[in-house]
Length: 190
Ligand SMILES: CC(C)(COP(=O)(O)OP(=O)(O)OC[C@H]1O[C@@H](n2cnc3c(N)ncnc32)[C@H](O)[C@@H]1OP(=O)(O)O)[C@@H](O)C(=O)NCCC(=O)NCCS
Image (cartoon, rainbow, N blue to C red):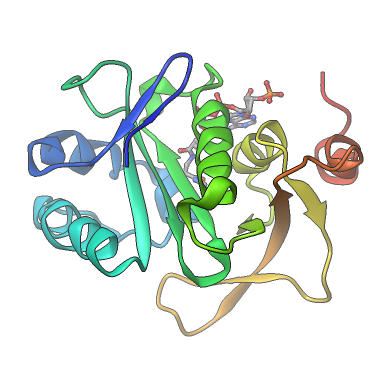
């Protein structure tokens, strides 16, 4: 299940990552944009690493990787893909952002999914709370095409309500219109 990119090794997040996961997940962006527990405690991190991640791999319901630069090195961020809709999700520890690493990881995970990592998958789906520019730029960098179904939403943290969202889709062959499809929300790439 390991994936190697130019600068990253994607491998299994393990119990030993709990201190970093707990620290990264205190980030106010996570409260705004993710459905990770808030406030986030060490036992949330233990449950994520000790139960959620291995159960997802065992059942095939969600595949989750740690981003590291070297084997056995510190976890920088996390990326996952769910069996349902082949939906990708990710977060990066604050001090590691802005180096293009998540775009690199997302691209590699999409290629893994579409090359047979998930049997029969022909698309990868991405969505984010409307206004999450960082996440949308990662999606653009990873070859997603912005799509506009009627009333796109994401569930709220409590699962009861919804928030307006941006949606994107990535195919095995990147659509030549993919990059420009983001212009209405992100503007042309600088
Ligand atoms: C979204 C997130 C993972 C981006 O991580 P990152 O490592 O900075 O991403 P990258 O360095 O690969 O950046 C990819 C692009 O996004 C841009 N970007 C990253 N964060 C940004 C931000 N907060 N605002 C604007 N642009 C941002 C980068 O400049 C880069 O742009 P480019 O493609 O034009 O060069 C990170 O900001 C994060 O963890 N956010 C909180 C959690 C979250 O929102 N997750 C996604 C939920 S859908």
